Image (cartoon, rainbow, N blue to C red; front, side, top):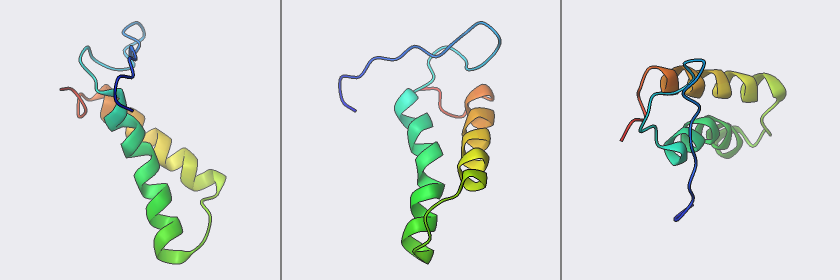
Length: 66
């Protein structure tokens, strides 16, 4: 996503300033692709929810700040 600009929400404590949105997207998608590539099974809604919650928690904690 070169050149993509995104602003993470500051109000509500969703993500600190400087959060790299590309890294957050990678964190959400990586477990889903891993499941697909290692088992051949498409990710289900539960796996997608789990990946999204984990990435959101990391973003709120500042894991993806540049």
